Amino acid sequence: MYQETDYPMPMPHAQPSEKCFLGDLPVSVQCSRFCGAEGVDEVQWMIRPTSYATFETQLEWVRLAYERALAEAGMSMDTAVWRRFLCSDLLNQVDWLKNSAFSQPDDPSNPCAISWVCQPPAAPSKVTLWVQHVDDPSGSLQKTKHGNTLSLNRGELIHHWTTGVSSPHVDGAYLQTLGIFAQYDKVLVDKGLCLADDVVRTWFFAQNVDANYAGLVTARNEVFAQQGLTDKTHYIASTGIEGGSSEVSARTMMDAYAISGVKPEQITHLHAQDYLSPTHIYGVAFERGTSIAYRDRKHILISGTASIDSHGEILFPGDVIQQLDRTLVNIEALLNEAGASLGDMQVMLVYLRDPNDHGPVMEVLVERFPDTPFECVTAPVCRPGWLIEIEGLAVVGNDAPELPAF
Image 1 (tube, one colour):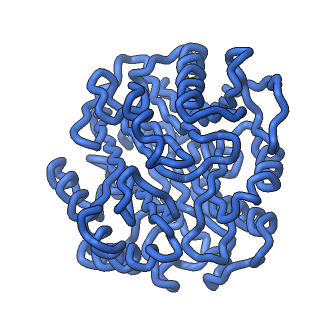
Image 2 (spheres, rainbow, N blue to C red; image 1 turned 90 degrees about the horizontal axis):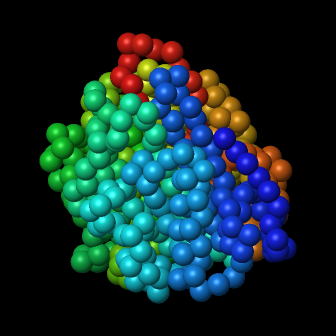
């Protein structure tokens, strides 16, 4: 389901196809909806203000547009499983996030995984919301929230989203990342899970990525080796990108997604080695992408992907548009391994090193992906020469009655 209309005011950059629900509400709302053969729908929204205002005002615009979007989709707030707030200046904005129920991580009346990340969205947005809902006509979702982990019980499988894990009370990115894994291991053990078998997606955010990424990588490599995650076994689909938390001393932060009960035969790791090198050849440890098969659908988790070749070299230094083109070629190659294409992308996040590149990049993306929710944020990539990186989620139909349902 996708709709669009014109806006009553000119915009500084090209904007995706969008819908404004209130004539006096300058907000862009993009929506994608995957309707499964068994009746369970997945909906992604990207909601951004399109006119300058204070953070408090923009957050209220986003809330109103979100509520209208839900009503138009015939869904309720309790179908939410994930909300990420992409903020321009999180340290100065956190109090307003805490004071609004839909952005409050600890709201007991409406359990949802809430992620706050300081990654300035394209102007004039000070806060863009990426939200995911699951609509099951057979009944209400079985959700529980313990600490910063939301668990969604789907019968054979339980999905767990953990957000905002940081360890700011030790010094440096290396020790903080070790602390993050130690905290997350407690979450996994409490739920009978392990890192190697059940965690399928991570997001690592580094404050000042140029200075702190190396410590993050060293810590992750050590933990993975201890847990049996190597180039001979497998890694985890991931994004490692600049991003800040609400803790001023946090050098690194993590969000993660794990699945209780997932079977090895459901998981396929994607490589596309004619286009992209293995990550371990340049010292990092993550999967390029992961496909998770269910009875009536497949989720294809695309890690942060840049303009790289099969030898691990940066292509088109200094040219963000050519890097964008190559990035999309690489993503399509990964998707093809899972029987999908760029047209199956349900949502994309676009990370840019230089905020001056937002305009031309958005013009290309609006033309190529008029029906795909996306946002461009300022977030330098792990290598300075990469000017752009894209991650996302694709969903395609599947017919495998022997597998668990989503």
